[in-house]
Length: 366
Ligand SMILES: NC(=O)c1ccc[n+]([C@@H]2O[C@H](COP(=O)([O-])OP(=O)(O)OC[C@H]3O[C@@H](n4cnc5c(N)ncnc54)[C@H](O)[C@@H]3O)[C@@H](O)[C@H]2O)c1
Ligand SMILES: O=C(O)C(=O)C[C@@H](O)[C@H](O)[C@H](O)COP(=O)(O)O
Ligand SMILES: [Zn+2]
Image (cartoon, rainbow, N blue to C red; front, top):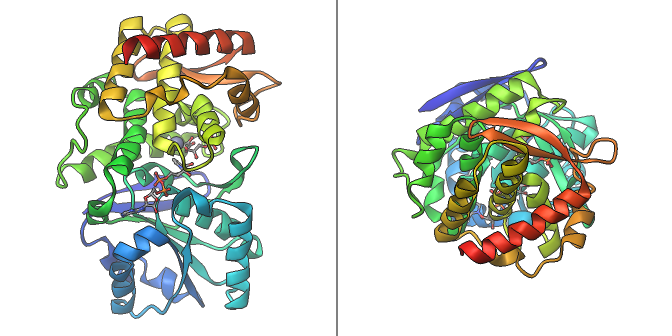
C-alpha cells in the first residue's frame, strides 16, 4: 500500500492507495468509526452497482454498522435539490453531530458528500473512498461544492476529509472516457510541477497508458503535488490557484454544455490548451508546444473540436463568475515554462482575441 500525509494548519490526514486499503477500517480508522454514533455511506449509483459490496464487506468485517444513501450517478448529484435531499435523509435517519459520512464514488459524489458533511448540523467528519482516477485530485485538499445554473462549484466550502482510501481495482469498470477524463488532472499536476514528467505523459496518447501496477504510484505523484500546495495555501489565497490551471475556460465549457455533458477532465483539457496559447503571449510557452498539446489531446480522444461553434460571449458570462476573479478582472493561471506557473490578470478583450486565435488553432491542428 502507498500512502502520504496531507498536513494543513488545522488538520492532517492520510491518503492511502492499494488493494487492501479497506482493511484500514479495522485498524487505523477503527476508533474514528467506532466513536461515531452513525456511519452513512453516500454512494454514486454507478460505482455502487459495481463495487459497493466491497466497501460493505470491509465495514462488516470491522464490525462497523452503516446506512447507505445512493446518489444520482455522476455530475447529476451536485445539485441544490440533491444537496437538501441528502440533509433530509440524514435528519430522517437521526444522524447527529457525532455521526460520520463516507463518500463512495467519483469527484462529483466526493464534492457533494463533503459539502453535506461540512454543513450538516454545522459540520461532521467524512472519509473519501474514491472510485475514479480523476478523484486522485478531488478527494484530496478539502474543496467541496455543488453547481448552480450560473456556474460550476458556485456554492461550497473548504472541509478537509478525515482520510482518503483509494482502492485502484475499482477502476477496472470505468469507461474509457472516464479514464481519459481522470488523466487530464494528472497531466495538470505534471504541467504545473515538472517539465520532464509532463513530456513523459505527452509521449503516449493511447489510454490507459499505465498498467494497474504502475497507476497507484503515478496517482500518488499527482497527489503529492496537490498535497504540497494545499499544505502551504489551504484556502487559495495564493499558489493554490495553480491547481486551477485550465479551469477558467474549463469550468465555463462545462457549464455552457450543461454539467456532465462535456466531462470535467475533458473541459479542463480544452481549458489547458487555451491557457498554453495565452502563455505564448504572457509567459514562455512556444506556439509549437501549444500545437503539439492540441494534437496530443485530440489524438487521445478529448473533444477539442467541441468549442468550434461556441461563441465567446456565453463563455465569458461564465468566466466572469470564476472564483479567481479579482476586482472585476479575469485571472488566469499561465506558464513561464512547464513546471513554472504564475497568475495573470487578462483583459476581456485580450481573452476574446485569444479565444478567436484558439478556435483557429484548433481548426488548423485537428
Ligand atoms: N474538490 C476538488 O478538488 C475537485 C478536483 C477535481 C474535480 N472535482 C470535481 O470532480 C467531478 C469530476 O469527477 P469524476 O471525473 O470522478 O466524475 P464523476 O464523479 O461524475 O464520475 C464519472 C462517471 O463515472 C461513474 N463511476 C464512478 N466510479 C465508477 C467506477 N468505479 N466504475 C464505473 N463507473 C464509475 C459515475 O457514475 C459517473 O458517471 C467534477 O464535479 C469536478 O468539479 C473536484
Ligand atoms: O484543489 C484545487 O484547488 C483545485 O482547483 C482542483 C481542481 O482540479 C478542481 O476542479 C476544483 O474543484 C476547482 O475548484 P474551483 O474553486 O475552481 O471551483
Ligand atoms: Zn479540476
